[in-house]
Image (cartoon, rainbow, N blue to C red; front, top):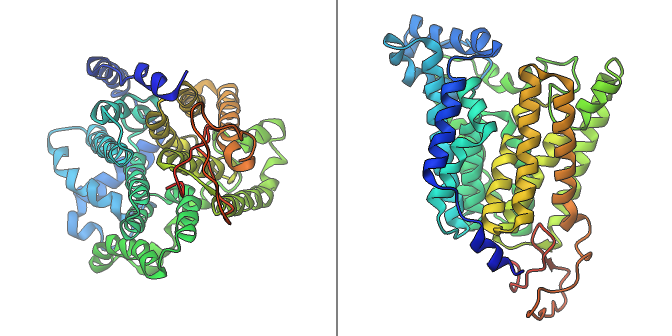
Length: 411
């Protein structure tokens, strides 16, 4: 069956079904909360209310970057009518709406039909819903910025690409999980170093209000380093990756593998960047490679948490929507299952669910990496197509699911 015929049968879910699923999750999760809410998020909101918006930023009161705290300050007046937990979750819901808009923009760059209905599906994804409606986290915001950066990469708007990268890092350090993709694209396309400066410029611009209010520069510069030391005794924190499995098998020895884990992640990133220089992908394949970068990074870096695969969840979904094949959607479902299983494990079902999630993620990463690991494995063109010669070039145009794509230079 051709890809076109398959895509015709895989249509976006009906809007009423998405609304029903989202409403059901909201009804179930809104009254609940996690320890992070009472230990961190609510005290930060109360600090802003007690000190006032301007005075609150005169000194550090959070281990998050100020970007998120600005938004929390904007929502803080709602605490006069709502309980603090609801205010924080409303901000997270607003972040989810931004994520859906970013998905719509990315699907537009991929020229996907019915992209509004596909983008709406984002709000009903279990990993997204649990992140906002239960945990009250802001991961949707940095993921939205990363999706915008990938859209800019597809459209070859490299200055905007790096600008969105800087915005993403300003909200969460986890944005660097997809950094190998942007590095590979920038090197491959010989992007001017001057355009790379857009990322630190955006980061600095978002730090500037806090700096002007009096927040010490040294504290801002070290926030992410201090975050990394928060759980220094763990090799992984319910993350669906190989290190969680190692922690289950040898809990006392696993933390000693920190150096090995870091070396493995850096080595995989170097391999990814190098292979991206000789293998070209179409637009859908590029999004698949961005998802692979996030899967490799979160899968191999130490001290990852259960929600750190959310970026891969959304990128692989965008790839599946763009490709429209059953195999692509199966891959997206595998990633979503892995992410959700780890979250459920964190919420109380424990190590067995995390192990299930890790198994799913490892399998999905292996499947996604095949076009880079062995690009010549499938040298048969699709039926009815004749490959064009690649004169004096070491370029193999593939899509992530192994199908050859002959599109000139692969862009």
